[in-house]
Length: 323
Image (cartoon, rainbow, N blue to C red; front, side):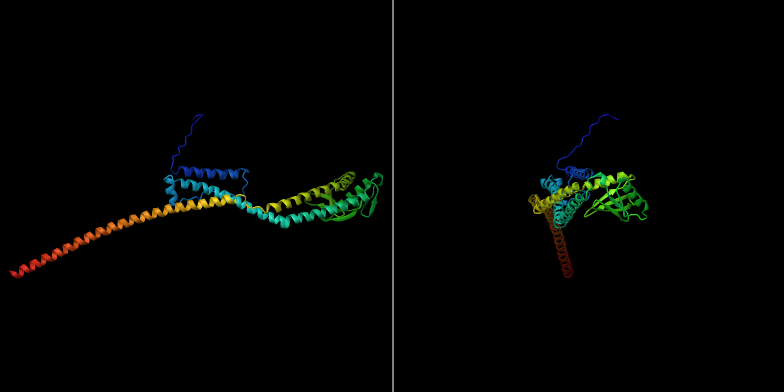
């Protein structure tokens, strides 16, 4: 109904308002942690199951600063525990990487590098430097023209009857040629193999396929350099991991201090609760004493009344005897 409105929120000191607003704050942090990707933590907890003890209710209602400190410490300790859990999880992951993952990657990369070096030497020794001296063997026939060799490759592709089965079809510049039909991607794949394997997707153009094959062989030095860079990276990761795994949780001392202080506050609140219980027991004892005292007075009155009755009966008996 109005373009502008003013919203007032009233908070009363030393009441449950502070506790309720803290719950709302925790809810907001929880929701923000889920809805954004800024938080580094991997898990979070809701606060629906938050409960207060009688001592905490008493302290909160009376404005006891200990309960405010305890509530703040609960949040801080929860965050520190979560950070420590993530630290420990990452520590275990680093141990696995050091013991298994990085050594396996390094071994595979070293083997690939040796294969690239051997393939590069093979290619340089058999490389066709004169375009007029083209040679390719396909299906047992040697072709000296690129277009004819490309057509022969396409003919082999058309004659294939089994999908996803690799067949050998010839030789080219020191590398064996194999073909298969990839049923998933619906395309023919040509593989050049010496030590490592270099895959080429074939098209429908005869000369274009020969160019693709030559490009794959020309890319061997680039693949060798990439493997060497990756090996250096993995070795650096292994070295860093070995340094990180020796570190301890950086906030361990802070966590221990807050846990110790939280234990003191819990003990203080429990003491307040015990004092409340003791006060109740004292009141009950006083009530019992008062009740017992009243009972004793009533019993005394009854006894006196009974004695008086006995005396009166004795007097009446004596008077009767005299008469």
